[in-house]
Length: 185
Image 1 (cartoon, helix red, strand yellow):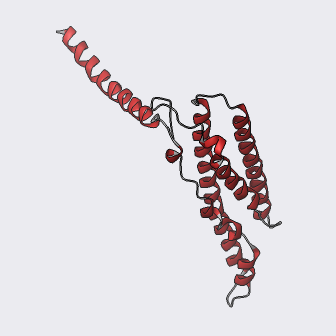
Image 2: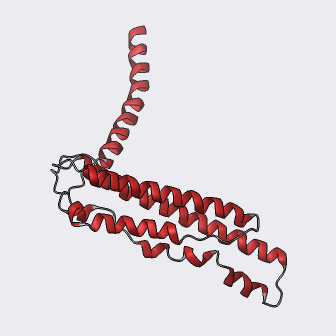
Image 3: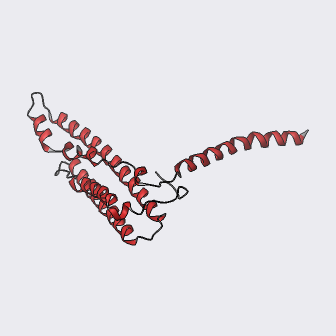
């Protein structure tokens, strides 16, 4: 009798753990679909980040201040809401850039030929983007303190440069890799 209780307890304990492990393996395998062509790279749409360039522009704040019923409190709330929206754009831009560079990196890793020149160019793209992101974050903090404006043209330009990078013929020519190669986004 006591042996049956031990088996029942063991089964009740191990079945949920086994299901959890199976679900985790399924999720990991789903992420590891191979990227075998340029068509499977995430779509780059730098144009969707162009509104960032005017989201914190002074024109809208000056317009609001000139309206009847304007109060400094309303202006502060407007600026705060605009910064919140801007941060959302920044998060999405960082995610998109990261996904695309990771896909490019995986393509380089699984390429039939060793292309150190393309790998170093991709690294420069990532460094430039991260430095531009750091600069924008700093200017955003100053903007919250009421000092200066936030210029994101360099950040958006860095994202557009990534698109130009993956459009290069030398990069496009090396992306025919076997279907079993690694992972995608």
